[in-house]
Length: 258
Image (cartoon, rainbow, N blue to C red):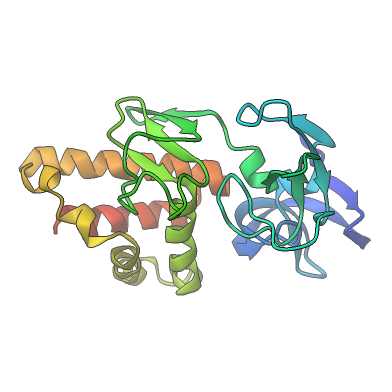
């Protein structure tokens, strides 16, 4: 059972309480986006992901054999650091190994589950993939080769880079749609669809495989894509909230009708 109140060295003035945040927040630990339950100080508008508030002092990860990751509130190494899970810049709390060419993991990425299952699909977190990511249409999310992890279905048909899912969600958030939805969910659905159409490449909605499908097959395909995204979003950002549901509904509406 999680402790409901903690005293954290990064915020010594007040205790942090485990509560539901009514709006999206930027974690004051790792500086990444968060939703729903977190440790927060309402007096100071201070938030920490659960993974950032109560980290492991050290751990080993299956993708990095022989590497012991230790927790730091800031990287002990100078220069720009990149999370080896999502390939985003490290700007705060981080797990880092001691090797000369050290690996870095942001706390939320360090805790990503190996497998996800539900809604008729099973996904596995992998370092390297044979399938193309459904967002970027590439096996890597870097010109220099595979960077960051991916979730891929057991059938190999549905695959997304963790980095690409984050990018999709961050763009919708930066456009302000999650803030708007609290006051006007129905009107905001069309706005979310616009955001999603901007983040999902045209090659996806016009690919030969989908064009050749008709009616029920195409609808089933997009429902599966939505299910996959929903599972990955929950794993990355935490507890499901209305924002996720609205986002996925908008995805189905905007893409299944193309």
